[in-house]
Image (cartoon, rainbow, N blue to C red; front, side, top):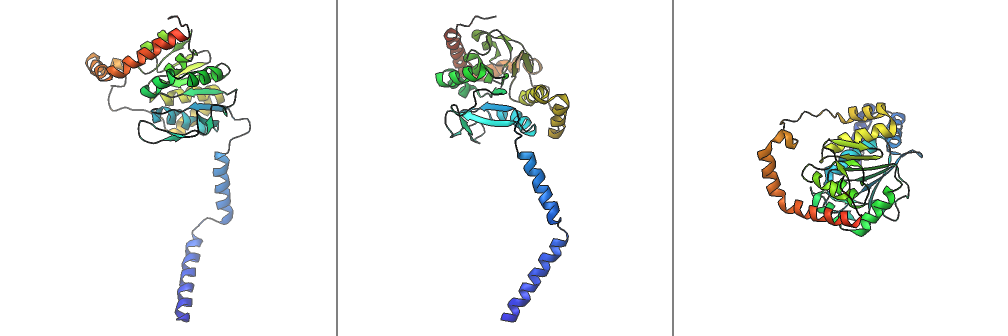
Length: 275
């Protein structure tokens, strides 16, 4: 029995050695590990990015820009009232890495994703609006994608600024003092707002150019292989046509009405004057 065990051990060792001959050297493995570690480390002077997360948000609104910020090796923090998991439209939760109190007073980028029902709750939440107003008053860039701009508006951060939002609710922006401009990404001074959901990558690349220069933004675009070729010309109200848009508005009626109420209440609270 002992001889049999020895034979098996020798065979196993031979197999390991044979496999090892085709593996990278230990030095190469250490180099690869060091390379990956270096890619994940945040440089000391990295731009600070505070990304609001909240229950009922749209995950893709966050993931698109976050992917860009991560490739740029920014100091990215997900911020909410508590370090708890918040729900998203696709059922994948996100957990905050910082609370409102832990978030630095001064950040390079303050970002708010969308998700209409969750956005409405943020618009009506004085704690969220107070946090956004405070950090936004000093942030180098105040930004959003999709309905996130409604939360910025409710915090008084878009008064007198050009801005955009998801097409279905973009007309609510003037109720909070903003000027709605119908573009995929709108920049006005240090405000940069993106349209609905997929505009997050366009926004991300534009803000990347501002943070690190055009060549770095181009590098990120190539890494992401961002070269959209949609199968249908249906990604905007103009392309979809009046009939499809009307059907969509009918299905959204309840949500959009609540959003209007929230925008009107916010406009009164911040003494907004439509532009």
